[in-house]
Image 1 (tube, rainbow, N blue to C red):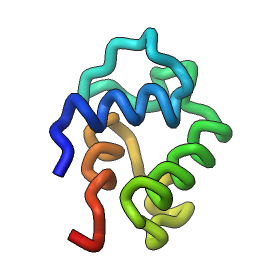
Image 2 (tube, helix red, strand yellow):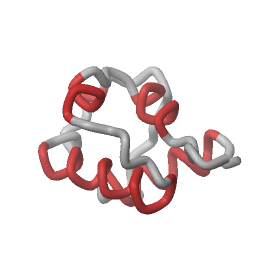
Image 3 (tube, rainbow, N blue to C red):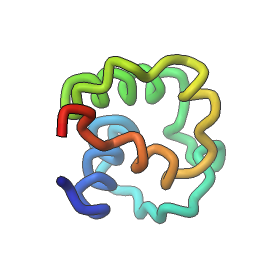
Image 4 (cartoon, rainbow, N blue to C red):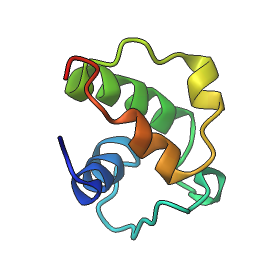
Amino acid sequence: TMDKNEKMKIFSEDVLMTGDIVLDEDILLESLIEWDSMAVLCLIAMLEEKFSRVDIGGEEIAGLTKVSNVLDLMENVNE
């Protein structure tokens, strides 16, 4: 399993498309200028590709409020 820092790096680079942001798990997603509809699509793709999560839909994504919620989804369902 990945540690929190590895997950934050993936979220920052693969979803938010930036390496320049300092993330904390308590940050509200809505406060991130990079958190937009494109980032949501990237999140779904990343979860499927890296964590075999094909069970994540719009309802789960809409329920995300903080970075920590995203990190919680970043677990491989096959492990």
